[in-house]
Amino acid sequence: MTPEEVFRTLVHGVAAGRYAGLPELYAEQTDVRHPMHPDRPEPLRSRTELRAHFGGGEDSPEDPLVRFEAVDIVVHRTEDPEVIVGEFAYLGTVKGSDESFHVPCVFVLRVRDGEIVESRDYVDHAAMARARERIAEITTEPAAAGGAS
Image 1 (tube, rainbow, N blue to C red):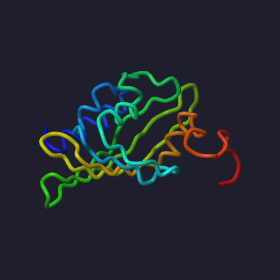
Image 2: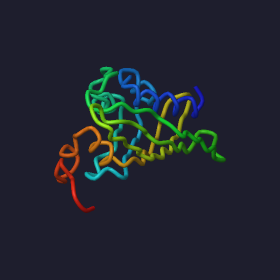
Image 3: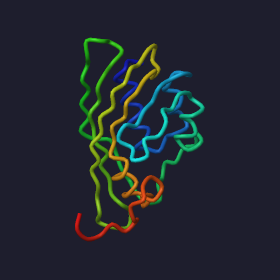
Image 4: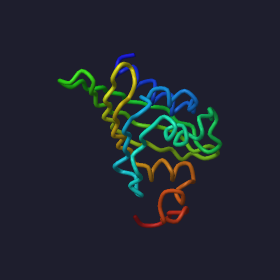
């Protein structure tokens, strides 16, 4: 697959909860970083670590709290044929309410021989966790964040 095809497979796979195949998009040895994550976690360096990151490699097509999709996808090619910059947003709704969310994202990927060997994923992790009512997992912010911001 081309770098753009790998990127699109990744972001649509996440949105659809098709996690089982996502680690296979990465090289066995890789370098995946999430620079905007509040905890500044260590880079993910292998498919095994990515499998754990994606929930043990099991599909989860029906998130009990949110429904979302990857939208507004724009892929920028660089002078390096292995590197692309993908801009997109996760757009969704919180089930059982009228609440919606829009989380802009930018992924910078290096894809070699159809596998991601390096990735910088710029995502508002707090916004995604808040939509899924999992904010306590990534920050000390209270789950019910009402009032002034």
